[in-house]
Amino acid sequence: MAFTSVLAVSSGLVQAVTTAVVTILVILAVLVVAAFVLLFRRRRRGADSGGLARRANILLVRLDDSLKRNDDELGFAIAQFGEEKTREFSAVIAGAKANLSEAFRLKQQLDDAYPDTETQVREWNARIVHLCESTQASLEEQATAFGRLRALESDAPTNLRAVRDLVATTSSRVATATATLERLSGDYADRVLATVGGNVAEAEALLRKATATADSADLGLARGGASDVAATVQDARSEVQHAAQLLDAIDNLDAGLSAESARLQQLVTASRADLAEARAARDSPPDPDSGAAIGLAMATMEGTLASLDRTDPAASIDRLQSSIETLDSALASARNQAQRLEHARTALTGALLTARSQIAATKDFVTSRRGGIGADARTRLAEAERLLAIAEAEADPVTALDTARSSATYSRDADALARYDALR
Image (tube, rainbow, N blue to C red; front, side, top):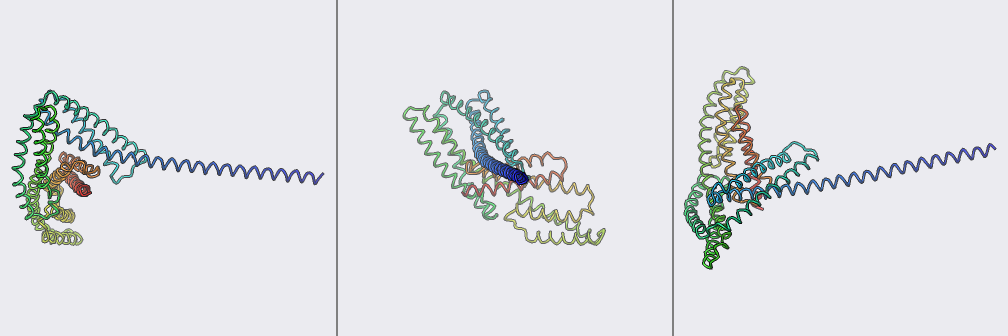
């Protein structure tokens, strides 16, 4: 009896242990399966997010180029059909610009230094895609409508004559643009002129192409197909307009560099006056540490003034401005708030000039290359324009100065990215 009882107890223990082992194995299997499912879902979400981001970037570039083309087209449409018939087109363009601005803002949020959650990345990219697709559809609808209108109302011979006149006018600017580039090459470093270095040659090629396209349109008219050559005339007009934009970029850079050079000279004069003030503060400082800090800042500024490169005024302004800020910081304890604000107002004028000039040069470069420039450069340019607008509206000169300098920094980043894209 006792032996039988022992066997029964042993059998029960074995069964309990077996049950426990099986239960543990089942739990482990469930955990492993769950882990694989979670990993697969995460990888799939990551892949989906990456694909969505690439699609958003592609659509953003396409919309930016499309809006520029349609904005140009709106001007021609107003000239041809009047403001009444183009009122809806104008409204669509205005809405497209607002949507593009929002899309660039979202792109900037995705690209900035602040980390975003996976949900934010997915939602913001999806929003960019929606904005770009819906806006592109509206632009294409208007383009189709005006295509039909032109087929009914266009005067191909008159338009062709206007294009040939535009070719002649633009061609007459080539010699002046060439001379301007030669003069700039003697005054400024090659890196400063890199954005427009090939503009004359590219403009001449476009003018030759526009002439050949116009000749083709003439041939079509001679065959009696006026309505069939409307698209050819439009192509010729786009080519000559692109050439004019390339030549405009040279003129704009010339004006910008002239303004920057004048601003550099103003800064040099102001810096020498600052040094005179700093000497007085250094010689009678409120404490030894302040005197030492002012002396070190003065030495930095004097070294900067002695080594300025006037062939690159923007870079020289940045270097000198940095020295000015260092000296300002050292003199902060000796300068009252009113003086500090007045200095910021003075510096703000130059900072806004630099930001505007840099943005104009970069914008001309991006506009003239169109599809060759990617979303990153365009996003930095859009952010630079946004910050410039904020700086121009800011009442506090210190805040406005910082914002204007940030705008210039974003614009320089956009310029570097755009040049890199153009080389690929």
